[in-house]
Length: 124
Image 1 (cartoon, rainbow, N blue to C red):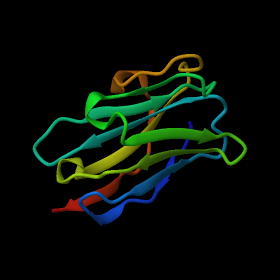
Image 2 (cartoon, one colour):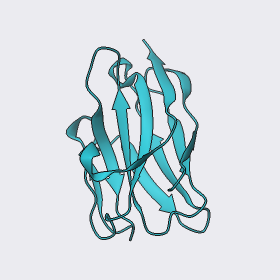
Image 3 (cartoon, rainbow, N blue to C red):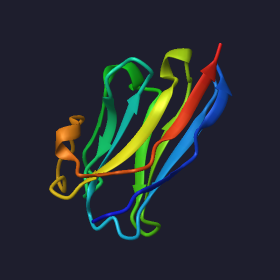
Image 4 (cartoon, rainbow, N blue to C red):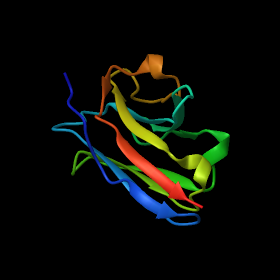
């Protein structure tokens, strides 16, 4: 079972940037998704990258502001978040899907291993 360890996050002012990292012992071409959950709201998929690194997807609310990349030599996937807004405040999770080699998905049903979560708070 792949263990995912997250880092990054924290408190930032509106318009600021943060970078989240998701590390594993061996990503082994697993697709990685980033999800977030705000208090009182359902978890939503916001970005993903296929195991091949060729395919990425973003939910509409983060397009043009968030960017997902992977470095397989480091066994890390990054989520660069720019132009942060108060509505981006949430707990962020990364997740891996062994079958997501050429594609990825924003549905959490496609993922089997989850990181521990990291808080992102954007102050207005």
